[in-house]
Length: 80
Length: 422
Image (tube, rainbow over the protein chains, first blue to last red):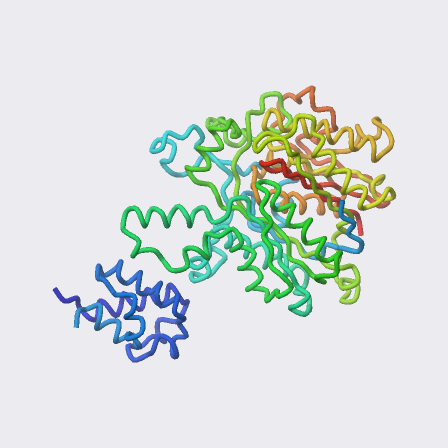
């Protein structure tokens, strides 16, 4: 069953804010993790691990390469 | 022996079971306020623990650090950051080249909470759920690394490990770095965050912990005939050590000189200290010898290791008595030197103890006031040194003074630090 994308976005933003201390208002779906949000690879792994836990999905380790933007991650988690 | 000419203390920081900073911790210690209390959890019932009390941090790290700082650091590194930032600010954030600034931040046990929490995760939910910073958070050098990153210290970041002597060994190491010309400024201290059913259970099993669950506040009773072990504590202490020349050049406020640092090892047993106290006495003598006879004969106060174990307190008291008599030239003078066991208030901060108690020794010199030892109902007649009881005791009002801090650790690690009025 596909997850609601708005709920996934909301939850993902919460995880990113917790990990990075970023202002939630600065996190738009179009932002890239690496360049716009300044998230390094270990922080990205942390975020994806916490997202797996929260949404009960499996995100393969190599998807860190393909999930460039917040929206990419939302789509993957929601099962697009 | 380690001669440490021209090392001064210019900043202090701490977060303890009494309160969250140095000055109020010191005032609470002078007032004889104990920090131990019953734990607000079900550990005793759930795990069959014999001890269900401890001296936990008075001001939680959550109230001081940001969310990401807490999530990326084990509590031991969190406490170290809090104490180190206080000490750095207290020293006036010295302008120093990063390549001349070092950190020595010790922990007795390391990132225990991270390690055990991560194992729970692997066992219950599988290795996929492990967080990527697990190893950097659990390693015992993580507090030193965290502080070095925070302050931009590039002359070296060290993490000496010697159980309950670790915090004192950090100051010994820091003084040597400056004396050897390897750094101008060193942030040195100890941290511990190891209150957990595993440690409470294991320390209790070795008969090291007080069992007075009915009265946590009076459980830590060093030198009392009815003492039955230490009370586990947590927290961190840090000092800014500086070469005297560097401190003078920037007109820094100086608390004290670190006049001598001594270390020795018992080579006796991994748990109890050598019952003759020879190793402890050698560390104290080394610190006094490094400072020289002119400083040694001004020795006016000892902050003892005194954890409140039946054997340990008596062994150290004998060693103190004999070393004082040598330093001061007579047993009569030695018998007048006020000895304080501040673990009666703070509990035993393990790897942080030597740092926090060195801070107490430094402030005793500043205020010319020895802090009390509380909870002594009847002084153990085997304790022949002069114990400060219940109320602070004034030190000589004029003239140069020196104060010693002792810290000893499982494994037979002995550290002694000698501070002198600036």
